[in-house]
Image (cartoon, rainbow, N blue to C red):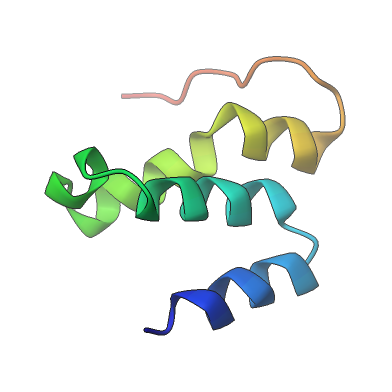
Length: 65
């Protein structure tokens, strides 16, 4: 599949948290039931992704509904 190149590209772009969250999604069956948009949103909101990208360690701010 094309998932490994995507993960490598995220690491190249220094989006390590997003790469880890994407890999975690691939390893769970729960995420396969979600739409693309729901999966994409959850990768960006992953606590691991937010912490790694911001470096603050603070929890992510809630997104508006």
